[in-house]
Length: 442
Ligand SMILES: Cc1ncc(COP(=O)(O)O)c(C=O)c1O
Image 1 (cartoon, rainbow, N blue to C red):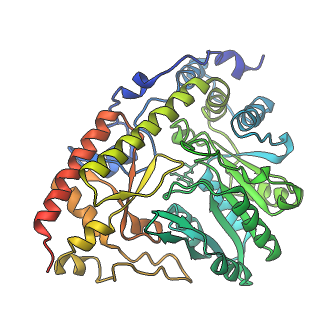
Image 2 (image 1 turned 90 degrees about the vertical axis):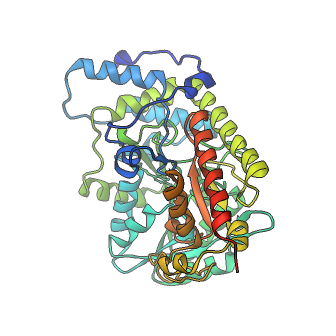
């Protein structure tokens, strides 16, 4: 029995909603969200981590690890990779072979490294926008262009679709060498269909584009069919694909700094792994290996209860909005705990004041993302709305413009105890009522 197995042999204990109802105080814990972003009295529903304790098996495993008192260099071994493969197989019907997997210290570090080593300075990296904002940093900080292919929003159905003609045209640009797909998609919360994924991979192969599939939200499909791990597509579609998975979102262990790159093509894998080593992102800290193994092998009960709790939170908010703030309409959420809410009805009926327009730079209400460099985040109408909500009630939600498109939307993270969700909804209602009173139109 390996040390990881012996120090962490804690059963996967039964778990229910009461576990997630427990409030956790995160102030004074160096929390990015609670200590850095929010002032006392404010309520941040922003950064994608959860205000829940992680699974009992992970907590006990790490306690035992600390008790060993020995924290020398570590290397992920078979127990780590078997845990990743077992989890993927059990929950997503896809078991990656051992040789395809490589440990990395996080999804974003891996993306930045891949941008540096798979593409060249000045290349285009393609994104379906709106999308997780840190992708822009990984691209632009490394001297590449972020090229947006904006998703097409259907306001009648509150849903998004890929603009295939636009995507193909941008793939065909000889400067486009990489595309990052958020699978499932943050902030929209949609799960790409296998046929759509296959079409993206085929287009990319035809145009010599490598795909990075960020699957960090893959375990958090709350409704409908499970997501498709990109490498589960059949063989001819695997050669230009890099898949990134992590327990980080699923188990609220972002500070574990553990993720796995999965790459089927040997040449691509060698190039990627060489880059990971050059960038020194392939060595785990003391918690990464035992924490990941405990997550992936002894936390299934916690995970099932978490998904039920998150789904109930989402439904609770959807019901509240429909009945109490009908001008705010959520987009259909299939995955993630990040609700993407369309505020256009409110902002059309109760428009911004001229001062607010000035403050956001006088942008048109539905701006177009610069097609050639998605860095230029023009502010949107919800930048004014979010500032107003925060000032009036202390509730912090993220304006859609953060994600490179979506200036009429807000994103609200819902992974917290129900009481906290209710507090947020109460503040939101108060703020919207005040907005309506003070923004009466012409
Ligand atoms: C799509 C996506 N990728 C990556 C990350 C962060 O990954 P990591 O903490 O492993 O660097 C996040 C965090 O919100 C995310 O939403």
